[in-house]
Picture (cartoon, rainbow over the protein chains, first blue to last red):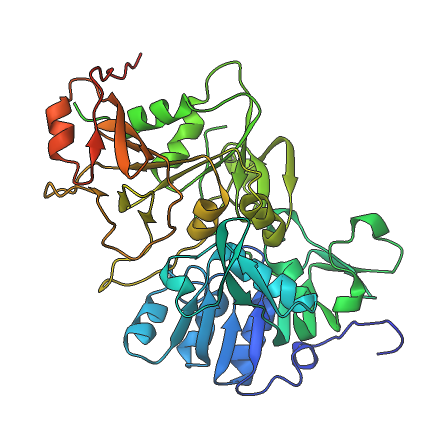
Length: 233
Length: 219
Protein backbone atom coordinates (compact mmCIF):
# COMPACT_ATOMS: atom_id res chain seq x y z
CA UNK A 1 0.00 0.00 0.00
CA UNK A 2 1.36 3.42 -0.84
CA UNK A 3 0.03 6.95 -0.98
CA UNK A 4 -3.71 6.88 -1.47
CA UNK A 5 -3.84 3.37 -2.84
CA UNK A 6 -6.31 1.55 -0.55
CA UNK A 7 -6.54 -1.71 -2.47
CA UNK A 8 -5.93 -4.96 -0.63
CA UNK A 9 -5.79 -8.30 -2.37
CA UNK A 10 -7.07 -10.77 0.20
CA UNK A 11 -9.98 -10.91 2.61
CA UNK A 12 -7.49 -11.77 5.40
CA UNK A 13 -5.83 -8.41 4.79
CA UNK A 14 -9.19 -6.68 4.44
CA UNK A 15 -10.30 -7.64 7.97
CA UNK A 16 -6.87 -7.65 9.64
CA UNK A 17 -7.02 -6.20 13.15
CA UNK A 18 -10.56 -7.31 13.97
CA UNK A 19 -10.56 -8.59 17.53
CA UNK A 20 -12.95 -10.16 20.02
CA UNK A 21 -15.32 -7.66 21.63
CA UNK A 22 -15.13 -5.06 18.85
CA UNK A 23 -18.03 -3.12 17.34
CA UNK A 24 -18.68 -3.68 13.64
CA UNK A 25 -21.01 -1.43 11.64
CA UNK A 26 -22.38 -3.12 8.53
CA UNK A 27 -24.12 -1.58 5.52
CA UNK A 28 -27.09 -3.26 3.84
CA UNK A 29 -30.87 -3.43 4.03
CA UNK A 30 -32.26 -6.94 4.27
CA UNK A 31 -29.97 -8.89 1.95
CA UNK A 32 -29.58 -5.95 -0.44
CA UNK A 33 -26.17 -4.28 -0.57
CA UNK A 34 -24.63 -6.38 2.19
CA UNK A 35 -20.86 -6.94 2.41
CA UNK A 36 -21.36 -10.66 2.07
CA UNK A 37 -17.69 -11.67 1.65
CA UNK A 38 -16.48 -9.49 4.52
CA UNK A 39 -19.12 -11.10 6.72
CA UNK A 40 -17.93 -14.54 5.56
CA UNK A 41 -14.38 -13.52 6.47
CA UNK A 42 -15.49 -12.63 10.02
CA UNK A 43 -17.00 -16.11 10.26
CA UNK A 44 -13.72 -17.63 9.10
CA UNK A 45 -11.79 -15.59 11.69
CA UNK A 46 -14.08 -16.90 14.48
CA UNK A 47 -13.97 -13.48 16.18
CA UNK A 48 -16.29 -13.49 19.20
CA UNK A 49 -18.32 -11.17 21.43
CA UNK A 50 -18.95 -8.74 18.60
CA UNK A 51 -21.41 -5.89 18.76
CA UNK A 52 -22.90 -5.63 15.28
CA UNK A 53 -24.73 -2.52 14.11
CA UNK A 54 -26.87 -3.23 11.07
CA UNK A 55 -30.47 -2.53 10.08
CA UNK A 56 -31.16 -6.29 9.90
CA UNK A 57 -29.34 -9.49 10.81
CA UNK A 58 -29.44 -11.37 7.51
CA UNK A 59 -31.34 -14.65 7.25
CA UNK A 60 -30.53 -18.17 8.40
CA UNK A 61 -27.43 -19.22 6.49
CA UNK A 62 -26.74 -15.95 4.66
CA UNK A 63 -25.49 -12.47 5.44
CA UNK A 64 -25.03 -11.59 9.10
CA UNK A 65 -27.12 -14.67 9.98
CA UNK A 66 -24.00 -16.83 9.52
CA UNK A 67 -22.26 -15.07 12.41
CA UNK A 68 -24.94 -16.42 14.74
CA UNK A 69 -24.09 -20.03 13.87
CA UNK A 70 -20.95 -20.02 16.03
CA UNK A 71 -22.32 -17.42 18.44
CA UNK A 72 -19.92 -14.71 17.37
CA UNK A 73 -22.39 -11.91 18.05
CA UNK A 74 -22.92 -10.67 21.59
CA UNK A 75 -25.20 -7.79 20.73
CA UNK A 76 -27.14 -6.57 17.69
CA UNK A 77 -28.24 -2.97 17.19
CA UNK A 78 -30.94 -3.14 14.51
CA UNK A 79 -34.37 -1.85 13.54
CA UNK A 80 -35.87 -5.13 12.37
CA UNK A 81 -34.73 -8.69 13.01
CA UNK A 82 -37.76 -10.73 12.04
CA UNK A 83 -36.34 -12.85 9.22
CA UNK A 84 -34.14 -15.16 11.20
CA UNK A 85 -35.10 -18.27 13.21
CA UNK A 86 -31.66 -18.74 14.78
CA UNK A 87 -31.72 -15.12 15.91
CA UNK A 88 -35.07 -15.74 17.59
CA UNK A 89 -33.79 -18.86 19.32
CA UNK A 90 -30.65 -17.19 20.70
CA UNK A 91 -32.58 -14.12 21.76
CA UNK A 92 -35.17 -16.17 23.68
CA UNK A 93 -32.37 -18.25 25.26
CA UNK A 94 -30.68 -15.08 26.50
CA UNK A 95 -27.55 -15.79 24.44
CA UNK A 96 -27.90 -12.65 22.37
CA UNK A 97 -28.68 -9.06 23.27
CA UNK A 98 -30.64 -6.85 20.94
CA UNK A 99 -31.08 -3.09 21.00
CA UNK A 100 -34.00 -2.28 18.71
CA UNK A 101 -33.57 1.16 17.22
CA UNK A 102 -35.92 3.00 14.83
CA UNK A 103 -34.60 2.81 11.29
CA UNK A 104 -34.19 6.56 10.80
CA UNK A 105 -32.59 6.93 14.22
CA UNK A 106 -30.18 4.13 13.34
CA UNK A 107 -29.20 5.80 10.07
CA UNK A 108 -28.77 9.13 11.84
CA UNK A 109 -26.72 7.55 14.67
CA UNK A 110 -24.26 6.28 12.06
CA UNK A 111 -24.27 9.55 10.13
CA UNK A 112 -23.72 11.60 13.28
CA UNK A 113 -21.05 9.20 14.53
CA UNK A 114 -19.11 9.61 11.31
CA UNK A 115 -19.57 13.40 11.39
CA UNK A 116 -18.24 13.89 14.92
CA UNK A 117 -21.65 14.67 16.40
CA UNK A 118 -21.95 12.82 19.73
CA UNK A 119 -25.73 13.00 20.05
CA UNK A 120 -28.84 14.56 18.53
CA UNK A 121 -32.50 15.17 19.37
CA UNK A 122 -35.34 13.49 17.51
CA UNK A 123 -39.10 13.22 17.92
CA UNK A 124 -38.90 9.58 16.81
CA UNK A 125 -39.53 7.29 19.76
CA UNK A 126 -40.71 9.97 22.18
CA UNK A 127 -43.42 8.51 24.44
CA UNK A 128 -42.54 4.95 23.41
CA UNK A 129 -40.32 2.29 25.02
CA UNK A 130 -37.48 3.59 22.82
CA UNK A 131 -37.55 6.87 24.76
CA UNK A 132 -37.38 5.24 28.21
CA UNK A 133 -34.53 6.65 30.26
CA UNK A 134 -33.44 9.12 27.59
CA UNK A 135 -33.14 12.87 28.08
CA UNK A 136 -36.22 14.79 26.84
CA UNK A 137 -35.96 18.39 25.59
CA UNK A 138 -38.68 20.63 24.25
CA UNK A 139 -38.09 22.74 21.15
CA UNK A 140 -40.89 24.84 19.61
CA UNK A 141 -43.56 23.16 21.75
CA UNK A 142 -42.61 19.67 20.74
CA UNK A 143 -40.81 17.01 22.76
CA UNK A 144 -37.68 15.29 21.52
CA UNK A 145 -35.44 12.57 22.94
CA UNK A 146 -31.67 12.62 22.89
CA UNK A 147 -30.06 9.80 20.94
CA UNK A 148 -26.33 9.13 21.07
CA UNK A 149 -24.40 8.51 17.89
CA UNK A 150 -22.57 5.30 17.01
CA UNK A 151 -19.05 4.66 15.80
CA UNK A 152 -17.43 1.30 15.15
CA UNK A 153 -14.00 -0.24 15.38
CA UNK A 154 -14.71 -1.54 11.89
CA UNK A 155 -17.23 -0.57 9.23
CA UNK A 156 -17.92 -3.12 6.51
CA UNK A 157 -19.44 -1.75 3.34
CA UNK A 158 -20.64 -3.04 -0.03
CA UNK A 159 -20.09 -0.71 -2.98
CA UNK A 160 -20.55 -1.11 -6.71
CA UNK A 161 -17.40 0.52 -8.01
CA UNK A 162 -14.45 2.10 -6.26
CA UNK A 163 -11.26 3.61 -7.55
CA UNK A 164 -7.97 2.67 -5.96
CA UNK A 165 -8.15 5.83 -3.82
CA UNK A 166 -11.28 4.48 -2.13
CA UNK A 167 -13.86 6.74 -3.79
CA UNK A 168 -17.03 4.66 -3.90
CA UNK A 169 -20.28 4.60 -5.85
CA UNK A 170 -23.22 2.40 -4.94
CA UNK A 171 -25.70 0.77 -7.30
CA UNK A 172 -29.44 1.47 -7.03
CA UNK A 173 -31.07 0.69 -3.67
CA UNK A 174 -27.99 -1.32 -2.63
CA UNK A 175 -26.83 2.09 -1.38
CA UNK A 176 -29.12 2.10 1.73
CA UNK A 177 -27.04 2.21 4.95
CA UNK A 178 -23.67 1.83 3.24
CA UNK A 179 -22.67 5.51 2.91
CA UNK A 180 -23.33 6.19 6.62
CA UNK A 181 -21.61 2.98 7.72
CA UNK A 182 -18.58 3.99 5.63
CA UNK A 183 -18.14 7.21 7.61
CA UNK A 184 -18.49 5.65 11.06
CA UNK A 185 -15.70 3.06 11.23
CA UNK A 186 -12.24 3.59 12.72
CA UNK A 187 -11.26 1.18 9.97
CA UNK A 188 -13.63 1.20 7.00
CA UNK A 189 -13.41 -1.69 4.57
CA UNK A 190 -15.30 -1.51 1.29
CA UNK A 191 -15.82 -4.49 -0.98
CA UNK A 192 -16.88 -3.75 -4.54
CA UNK A 193 -17.74 -5.41 -7.80
CA UNK A 194 -15.20 -3.44 -9.79
CA UNK A 195 -12.07 -1.43 -9.00
CA UNK A 196 -11.13 1.30 -11.46
CA UNK A 197 -8.27 3.78 -11.76
CA UNK A 198 -8.52 7.26 -10.19
CA UNK A 199 -10.17 9.60 -12.68
CA UNK A 200 -12.49 6.97 -14.13
CA UNK A 201 -15.35 7.83 -11.76
CA UNK A 202 -17.05 11.19 -12.18
CA UNK A 203 -15.92 13.22 -9.13
CA UNK A 204 -19.36 14.82 -8.82
CA UNK A 205 -21.05 11.41 -8.66
CA UNK A 206 -18.96 9.86 -5.86
CA UNK A 207 -21.21 8.73 -2.99
CA UNK A 208 -18.43 8.02 -0.47
CA UNK A 209 -15.25 10.08 -0.81
CA UNK A 210 -12.02 8.13 -0.25
CA UNK A 211 -11.14 10.01 2.95
CA UNK A 212 -13.54 7.72 4.84
CA UNK A 213 -12.15 4.52 3.37
CA UNK A 214 -9.13 2.56 4.60
CA UNK A 215 -9.27 -0.61 2.53
CA UNK A 216 -10.85 -1.59 -0.78
CA UNK A 217 -11.20 -5.12 -2.08
CA UNK A 218 -12.81 -6.58 -5.18
CA UNK A 219 -15.17 -9.47 -4.56
CA UNK A 220 -17.71 -11.65 -6.31
CA UNK A 221 -21.24 -11.57 -4.99
CA UNK A 222 -24.17 -13.96 -4.79
CA UNK A 223 -26.68 -11.10 -4.20
CA UNK A 224 -29.45 -13.25 -2.84
CA UNK A 225 -33.01 -11.93 -3.25
CA UNK A 226 -35.29 -12.03 -0.19
CA UNK A 227 -38.72 -11.41 -1.78
CA UNK A 228 -38.79 -12.20 -5.48
CA UNK A 229 -41.83 -10.31 -6.77
CA UNK A 230 -42.62 -10.01 -10.48
CA UNK A 231 -45.35 -8.80 -12.80
CA UNK A 232 -46.29 -10.46 -16.06
CA UNK A 233 -44.29 -8.84 -18.87
CA UNK B 1 -70.80 -5.21 5.02
CA UNK B 2 -67.33 -4.57 6.35
CA UNK B 3 -64.95 -3.24 3.74
CA UNK B 4 -62.70 -5.68 1.90
CA UNK B 5 -58.96 -5.09 1.76
CA UNK B 6 -59.39 -3.73 -1.75
CA UNK B 7 -62.17 -1.35 -0.68
CA UNK B 8 -60.03 -0.05 2.17
CA UNK B 9 -57.28 0.65 -0.35
CA UNK B 10 -59.78 2.31 -2.72
CA UNK B 11 -61.09 4.56 0.02
CA UNK B 12 -57.57 5.64 1.06
CA UNK B 13 -56.70 6.33 -2.57
CA UNK B 14 -59.34 9.10 -2.52
CA UNK B 15 -57.10 10.99 -0.12
CA UNK B 16 -54.35 11.17 -2.73
CA UNK B 17 -53.80 14.53 -4.38
CA UNK B 18 -51.97 15.48 -7.53
CA UNK B 19 -48.27 15.98 -6.77
CA UNK B 20 -48.26 14.08 -3.47
CA UNK B 21 -45.19 12.21 -2.22
CA UNK B 22 -46.60 9.18 -0.40
CA UNK B 23 -45.19 6.45 1.84
CA UNK B 24 -47.26 3.25 1.91
CA UNK B 25 -46.65 0.72 4.68
CA UNK B 26 -46.55 -3.04 4.26
CA UNK B 27 -49.83 -4.94 3.80
CA UNK B 28 -53.12 -3.22 2.90
CA UNK B 29 -51.44 0.21 2.51
CA UNK B 30 -49.36 -1.22 -0.36
CA UNK B 31 -52.60 -1.99 -2.26
CA UNK B 32 -53.37 1.73 -2.45
CA UNK B 33 -50.87 1.95 -5.30
CA UNK B 34 -53.35 -0.05 -7.43
CA UNK B 35 -56.08 2.61 -7.07
CA UNK B 36 -54.32 5.88 -7.84
CA UNK B 37 -57.08 7.95 -9.51
CA UNK B 38 -56.77 8.72 -13.20
CA UNK B 39 -55.37 12.13 -14.00
CA UNK B 40 -53.27 12.60 -10.89
CA UNK B 41 -49.60 11.94 -10.35
CA UNK B 42 -48.18 10.69 -7.06
CA UNK B 43 -44.68 9.52 -6.23
CA UNK B 44 -44.22 6.61 -3.84
CA UNK B 45 -41.45 6.80 -1.27
CA UNK B 46 -39.80 3.60 -0.07
CA UNK B 47 -37.84 4.20 3.11
CA UNK B 48 -34.82 2.09 2.22
CA UNK B 49 -33.94 4.89 -0.20
CA UNK B 50 -36.17 5.19 -3.28
CA UNK B 51 -38.48 8.04 -4.27
CA UNK B 52 -40.55 7.11 -7.30
CA UNK B 53 -41.24 3.42 -6.83
CA UNK B 54 -42.45 1.68 -9.98
CA UNK B 55 -44.27 -1.63 -10.46
CA UNK B 56 -42.75 -5.04 -9.77
CA UNK B 57 -40.21 -6.01 -12.44
CA UNK B 58 -40.84 -8.53 -15.18
CA UNK B 59 -38.84 -11.75 -14.89
CA UNK B 60 -36.23 -10.20 -17.22
CA UNK B 61 -35.96 -6.97 -15.24
CA UNK B 62 -35.36 -8.53 -11.80
CA UNK B 63 -32.38 -6.93 -10.10
CA UNK B 64 -31.17 -7.83 -6.59
CA UNK B 65 -29.98 -4.24 -6.11
CA UNK B 66 -33.46 -2.84 -6.66
CA UNK B 67 -35.84 -3.51 -3.75
CA UNK B 68 -38.47 -1.71 -1.70
CA UNK B 69 -38.86 -1.37 2.07
CA UNK B 70 -40.68 -4.74 2.14
CA UNK B 71 -37.55 -6.27 0.56
CA UNK B 72 -39.54 -7.04 -2.60
CA UNK B 73 -37.94 -6.59 -6.00
CA UNK B 74 -39.27 -3.41 -7.63
CA UNK B 75 -38.51 -1.00 -10.45
CA UNK B 76 -37.88 2.74 -10.43
CA UNK B 77 -40.55 4.92 -12.03
CA UNK B 78 -39.65 7.60 -14.56
CA UNK B 79 -38.25 10.55 -12.62
CA UNK B 80 -37.27 8.47 -9.59
CA UNK B 81 -34.32 9.19 -7.33
CA UNK B 82 -32.28 6.80 -5.19
CA UNK B 83 -30.36 7.80 -2.07
CA UNK B 84 -29.04 6.64 1.28
CA UNK B 85 -31.19 5.62 4.25
CA UNK B 86 -30.11 8.79 6.11
CA UNK B 87 -31.37 10.93 3.22
CA UNK B 88 -34.55 8.86 3.09
CA UNK B 89 -35.31 9.42 6.76
CA UNK B 90 -34.37 13.07 6.49
CA UNK B 91 -37.33 13.33 4.08
CA UNK B 92 -39.56 11.43 6.47
CA UNK B 93 -38.43 13.05 9.72
CA UNK B 94 -38.25 16.50 8.17
CA UNK B 95 -41.95 16.34 7.30
CA UNK B 96 -41.48 16.35 3.51
CA UNK B 97 -43.71 13.34 2.80
CA UNK B 98 -47.28 14.48 2.06
CA UNK B 99 -49.12 11.33 3.12
CA UNK B 100 -48.17 8.25 5.14
CA UNK B 101 -50.42 5.19 5.29
CA UNK B 102 -49.70 2.43 7.77
CA UNK B 103 -51.32 -0.35 9.76
CA UNK B 104 -51.66 -0.65 13.53
CA UNK B 105 -52.77 -2.94 16.37
CA UNK B 106 -54.43 -0.12 18.34
CA UNK B 107 -55.07 3.62 18.27
CA UNK B 108 -56.60 5.78 20.97
CA UNK B 109 -58.57 8.99 21.40
CA UNK B 110 -55.38 10.98 22.02
CA UNK B 111 -53.86 10.00 18.69
CA UNK B 112 -51.49 7.42 20.17
CA UNK B 113 -50.63 4.42 18.02
CA UNK B 114 -49.36 0.93 18.91
CA UNK B 115 -48.18 -1.12 15.96
CA UNK B 116 -44.89 -2.88 16.63
CA UNK B 117 -44.81 -4.92 19.81
CA UNK B 118 -47.01 -7.38 21.64
CA UNK B 119 -45.43 -8.18 25.03
CA UNK B 120 -44.90 -11.90 25.50
CA UNK B 121 -44.65 -12.48 21.77
CA UNK B 122 -41.42 -12.19 19.85
CA UNK B 123 -40.41 -8.63 19.17
CA UNK B 124 -39.18 -8.27 15.62
CA UNK B 125 -38.56 -4.54 15.65
CA UNK B 126 -40.17 -1.28 14.62
CA UNK B 127 -38.32 -0.78 11.34
CA UNK B 128 -39.19 2.70 10.11
CA UNK B 129 -42.66 2.96 11.71
CA UNK B 130 -41.63 5.20 14.62
CA UNK B 131 -39.90 7.61 12.25
CA UNK B 132 -42.89 7.68 9.92
CA UNK B 133 -45.45 8.46 12.62
CA UNK B 134 -43.23 11.07 14.29
CA UNK B 135 -42.28 12.77 11.05
CA UNK B 136 -45.49 12.97 9.04
CA UNK B 137 -48.30 15.41 9.62
CA UNK B 138 -50.77 13.63 7.35
CA UNK B 139 -51.08 10.00 8.43
CA UNK B 140 -53.87 7.51 7.77
CA UNK B 141 -53.95 4.40 9.92
CA UNK B 142 -55.71 1.35 8.51
CA UNK B 143 -56.80 -1.53 10.69
CA UNK B 144 -59.73 -3.76 11.47
CA UNK B 145 -62.15 -2.04 13.84
CA UNK B 146 -62.20 -4.93 16.30
CA UNK B 147 -60.28 -8.15 16.87
CA UNK B 148 -61.60 -11.53 15.78
CA UNK B 149 -63.01 -11.87 19.29
CA UNK B 150 -64.86 -8.59 18.94
CA UNK B 151 -62.54 -6.50 21.12
CA UNK B 152 -62.27 -2.89 20.02
CA UNK B 153 -58.95 -1.61 18.69
CA UNK B 154 -60.13 2.01 18.97
CA UNK B 155 -59.42 2.67 22.59
CA UNK B 156 -59.53 5.18 25.43
CA UNK B 157 -55.88 4.45 25.89
CA UNK B 158 -53.60 2.09 23.97
CA UNK B 159 -52.76 -1.00 26.01
CA UNK B 160 -49.71 -2.05 23.97
CA UNK B 161 -46.33 -0.28 23.89
CA UNK B 162 -46.60 2.79 21.67
CA UNK B 163 -45.08 3.44 18.27
CA UNK B 164 -45.79 7.15 18.59
CA UNK B 165 -47.73 9.49 20.86
CA UNK B 166 -50.30 12.07 19.85
CA UNK B 167 -49.56 11.76 16.14
CA UNK B 168 -52.60 10.09 14.54
CA UNK B 169 -55.50 12.16 13.21
CA UNK B 170 -57.18 9.83 10.67
CA UNK B 171 -58.24 6.20 10.96
CA UNK B 172 -59.90 4.01 8.37
CA UNK B 173 -61.18 0.65 9.57
CA UNK B 174 -63.21 -2.00 7.81
CA UNK B 175 -66.31 -0.35 9.33
CA UNK B 176 -65.73 3.39 9.39
CA UNK B 177 -63.64 6.43 8.61
CA UNK B 178 -62.91 8.57 11.65
CA UNK B 179 -60.89 11.61 12.59
CA UNK B 180 -59.24 12.07 15.98
CA UNK B 181 -59.36 15.41 17.75
CA UNK B 182 -60.08 16.87 21.17
CA UNK B 183 -59.73 13.48 22.86
CA UNK B 184 -62.35 11.66 20.77
CA UNK B 185 -62.93 9.72 17.59
CA UNK B 186 -65.22 11.64 15.24
CA UNK B 187 -67.26 9.39 12.95
CA UNK B 188 -67.18 10.74 9.38
CA UNK B 189 -68.24 7.86 7.13
CA UNK B 190 -69.45 4.31 7.51
CA UNK B 191 -68.94 1.23 5.35
CA UNK B 192 -71.90 0.36 3.09
CA UNK B 193 -74.61 -1.38 5.10
CA UNK B 194 -72.82 -0.99 8.44
CA UNK B 195 -74.99 0.64 11.10
CA UNK B 196 -73.92 3.47 13.34
CA UNK B 197 -74.95 1.24 16.28
CA UNK B 198 -72.46 -1.45 15.26
CA UNK B 199 -69.67 1.12 15.02
CA UNK B 200 -70.59 2.53 18.45
CA UNK B 201 -70.63 -0.95 19.97
CA UNK B 202 -67.18 -1.75 18.59
CA UNK B 203 -65.54 1.53 19.59
CA UNK B 204 -64.23 1.61 23.15
CA UNK B 205 -62.89 5.16 23.10
CA UNK B 206 -65.19 8.21 23.09
CA UNK B 207 -66.93 8.45 19.72
CA UNK B 208 -68.62 11.63 18.50
CA UNK B 209 -71.44 10.76 16.10
CA UNK B 210 -73.02 13.46 13.93
CA UNK B 211 -76.70 13.35 12.98
CA UNK B 212 -75.89 12.22 9.48
CA UNK B 213 -73.15 9.64 8.79
CA UNK B 214 -72.76 9.16 5.05
CA UNK B 215 -72.15 5.69 3.62
CA UNK B 216 -69.05 5.16 1.55
CA UNK B 217 -69.77 4.31 -2.05
CA UNK B 218 -67.70 2.10 -4.31
CA UNK B 219 -67.98 1.68 -8.04
